[in-house]
Length: 617
Image (tube, rainbow, N blue to C red):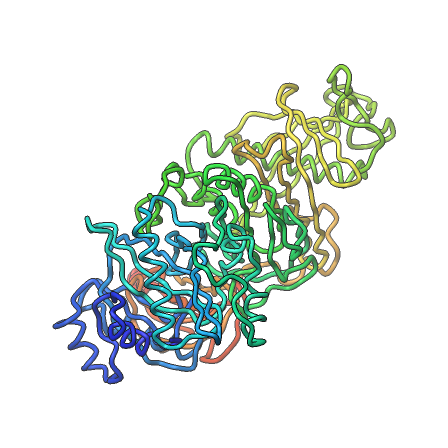
């Protein structure tokens, strides 16, 4: 059953409904093309026979796209699974992905522990799963479970397994089709444990020991409440979800990791001070929640995603929150595999969003991050007292009278206040400066030098545990858990903040900022300048660390805009890097098999038209 092609044949023989397609042994390219065009039809799905996790899988919408997609799927499959065989399936548009957890022992017993809805997917990788699947008629739910057990018994299966089905949302008769069987425990198995109260690993051990299933009566399998799981990936949603690597310098999940839990659970192997490398899948953690019903479980999922504190690598947590907060998620059974295609703009993470509101929110959070930095620089973390008087809720002013930054008396009155210029560095290494002017009461007047935003007056204090209270313009109170990290080599200070429980529902529930260090070390200035290139040339840089697996061009070759120049592999997935504009490839700075760092120059393209214009002049 681990082979998608063999399992399809077995399921058809066992009268389990299967998606129409081609799953024969003949893998000749011409045969595959013939089957695709004449029998399967478009759109279709190419799937690695031994695949999983979305690897080696491509959607093909037309005959013209088939051969390039086939080559890419086979290459990715070879890299991930050591096998290039594929199957072809009719691609169902916007189906629900519903899978059934089965357990079978050596005594002939087989049961299903209800189903999971895994329809929210990106690049065929599951993102948020829930159990049980919502809005299914009881007879369909029973039919799914019984067909799953039939599938397992057709091969005398023994162990935990997951039988996956595609539920056709366009049909009027609730049609569903066998997709594949995963002959193992799934990533999302905790949500089944949450609703059944059963330890699936314990069941596996008992099966392996030759014992009978702990529960053999199907009607006795519990199903209590509702559960969600969110997969947390080290990837950058603002950069087309490119896998990310880095050093985790702060990690504080909303529950004790790997300790189980009846309502909130975190399964992860990452810890503070650990490095995330290119050699593994980008999934780094799982957040699981349980509640009496779906609405409460969804609310708990969102609240705990906002409490998840991770710094050092980009993650998909903001994206997960946007998905879970989307109005479609409130409707039972409304999410299908086309969710992200249909609601892409609603859930898009855009660090450079335009518009007055987006700019003001960004400036607000950067101003709060600047205040956190100044409190740390002034050694005001852990100062005795709090920002507020608990009885009157009046602001307390706790700055030192000898401080050169704030709370001090200076000759010259307002005009003599201490002013510091801070430099922010964004994800594209572009810099933005702001002035922070110290007031005698310990607050700061923050003004960005681009002149687009109003000045903000921010009063703040930070406890020894990193909890920072701030008051903006004397009226708005916010509270954050703050973490910071100095990078002496690169001359930067990173500041991260997460809203405490009272402010978790605020749109500005988190902030992240990187500053040029006000006191740079001698080593930090080395190598800061951009690579030197001639006028009219464009650098093609690696968007992430990874391995070069294919060069599609040679030096001297002419390319058009968006032509693929380099293909990289990072975290077991292929990524294509295209030419940003047309021109001539004048330099290739990488080789097949080479491991490159994020930002490494891979090639240089010269604008031929610009050069000819210059010569003519």
